[in-house]
Image 1 (cartoon, rainbow, N blue to C red):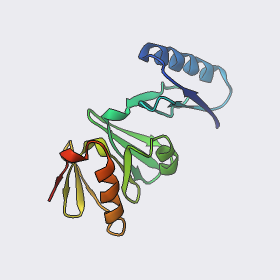
Image 2 (cartoon, helix red, strand yellow):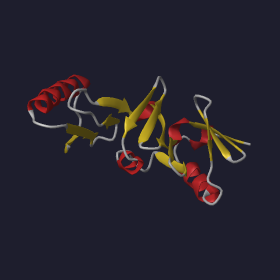
Image 3 (tube, helix red, strand yellow):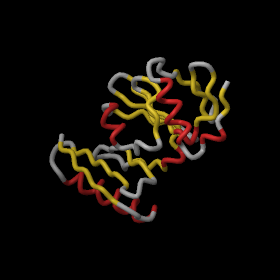
Image 4 (tube, helix red, strand yellow):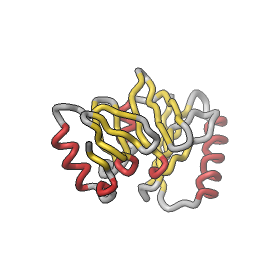
Length: 157
């Protein structure tokens, strides 16, 4: 499998769709399987890798709640739906800005913008989902969370 990584910045959604369609056509013309991975330098969106027969999926960071490892897949949970993509967790983590996503426990990254409550040893997200807090890293995680700009809205119980 060939991997092609393209970094973009400040493209409109229309131009991103045009680029994705062109990449799809290019992938179909190339021999073998090609995986395109787009990343947005403006740090506003995540582009999930795609195969030659599908378009890349664009997820604005403000819609992404969490990513979690599931064997050889990563689950991207968003405000309106989830995506299960065959991808190594560490590769998915590299696509996210470190200043927005909190590694609450092994194989789980949470968007700090969507953390609504700290309940004992759990984080409660804006959609009601609950994730465990690493006991060894709890103090460090709480400090990082307090430094995040929207942390004043988080209820701690």
